[in-house]
Length: 395
Image 1: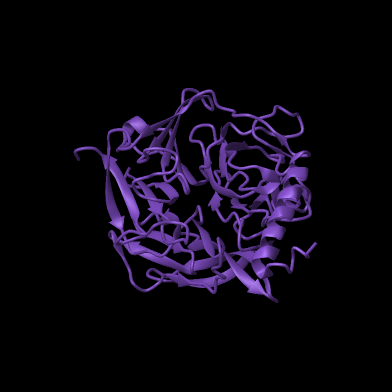
Image 2: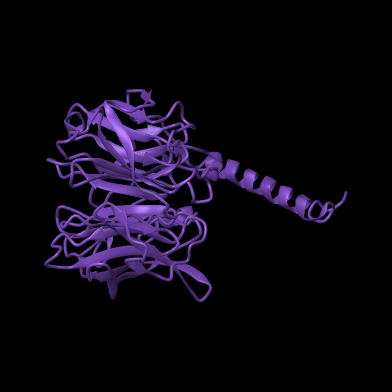
C-alpha cells in the first residue's frame, strides 16, 4: 500500500492530517461532557429591531474592535491593525490618536480599549494588543496619556499574556470596584484554560497601575475566573453589579460546534472549558445562563442605561459575528430571562449589517454598534467598516 503522506503529494498529506485530527477529536470528545441549553425561551428574529431606527455615525474604519466614550464627548475606537482613532463632534479624525506596533494576524492585533474611571483627573487610556517577541505572539495591556487629539505612551500595565493567531480574548473594562478586568483566550490550547499558572483562558483583574489586588481569589495572581475558551465581552448589570461575560463555544475541537455562552462571572469561578460545555449542573463548574446551540459567536456586550430608548432600559445587548445579529436579552428579574431577540437578522446566518463586534450605550442615550466586515470573514460593503447609532423610530 502506498504511503498516504506521499502518494498524492501535499493534498494527500493534508487530507490524512485532517483525518488524524478528526480521529483525535472524536476520542477526546468522549472525555468532554456536554450539556443542554440553560435558557427556557427561544430566540425571536426582529429584522427591524423594536421601535428603533439605525443611522450611520462613522464609516471607513478598518476592523474596529472596541468603542469607548470620554466624559468630554470625544470617542475612541480601536482598529485591529494597530490604530486608535479619535471621533470628535461626530467626525473621524484622519490622524490616529495612538498607533501601536500590533501583530495583526488572524484574530490577533489591537483589541480592547478602556478609559480610566477617574478620567480626566487620571488622564489614561488603556489598550490590549498582540505583539511579536522572539518569533512568538504575546498580548499585553498598555497605558497611554491623553493629550487632546493624541495619546502618548505611558507604561506597560500587564505583559506576557499568551497570544496566538486565534483565541486572544481581548476585551478590557473597568468594573464598579475601580479595577481593570481583562479577558484572555486559550490560544486554541484548551488545557491552558484550566491551568491557574497560565494567564490564558481567563478573566484577569488588576489595579489601574497593574498591581494585583489583595482580594483577588488566588494569591499573588491576576486570575479572577478561569475555564474560559475565548471570552469576548464583559459588562456589569446596573443595580446588581453582577459581571456578565460572552464567550465563544467550540468550532470543531473535540468534534463539537456552537455552544456559545453568556455567563455571570463570580470570583474564583471555574467555567469548565475544556472539561464541559453547555449547562450540566455539575458542582465543580459554573453553568452559563444562556447556551446557543446555533453558531452565534457573541462579541462585545453592554447593558443599556440611557433614557432616550426607555423601553430598552436594563436590557443586555450582544454584538454577534457569524450570526450577524444584534441580540437583545430582556430580564424579568435580576437574571431570569424573559426574551431573547435577534435584531436586524432574518435567520441565524443572515444579518442586515454583517458581522458585529462591539455594542456600547452612548452618553447621548443612543445605542452604538460596530461592524467587522473587513476582518477577513465578512463581506465588506461600501464604506465598511462602520459605527451605527440606534435612536427611537421616527425621531
